[in-house]
Image 1 (cartoon, rainbow, N blue to C red):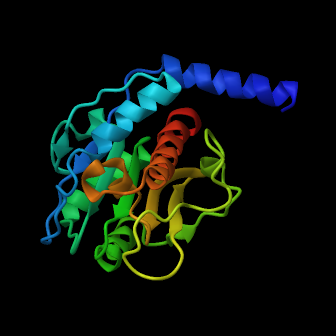
Image 2: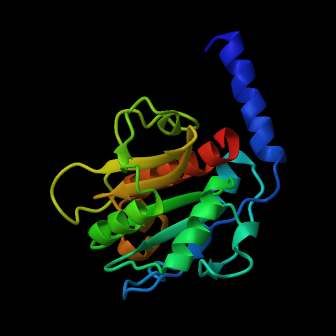
Length: 215
């Protein structure tokens, strides 16, 4: 690592550690899907993030609808589950406002939400597609080196996993992981091997680190 790269990395680390506590808000949604699936997942990730990086976290369960007045006090939104996701027009407007104002949405398909999530994203940003992120995208190398490929945590269906994004004015505002179910690895309930859970936590740490240092 060059001196310039090392200095840059240290500056980013100081920025992340000195920032206020980061939390993760789980989004409630209509349509019948189980937005409440794996309720401990993001809490476990936040605790691991604090342990591994030293950054301050607020490891409390928080679930909000897009119409909740507290929404804009929480930059990092998380959505997961099985089945249908449906937003009202007002919810779409609120989510777009949140994202273009500096917010971030991480969506992790726990199997069965892919088609409906893509429909909602097309309503949210009609002129954009969920573009696959290349292996050299900074998110995959910002803390742990995951440039060899996004880990596949659960074999819900055959095929490779993917990480896709939507950008607004050059900033990643939506990250969507499909055919991997990263967040399942953040909870011990599924009995994943330690190596598998470690890969899930590494991906989660990279997501949080990227948001803290690049947004």
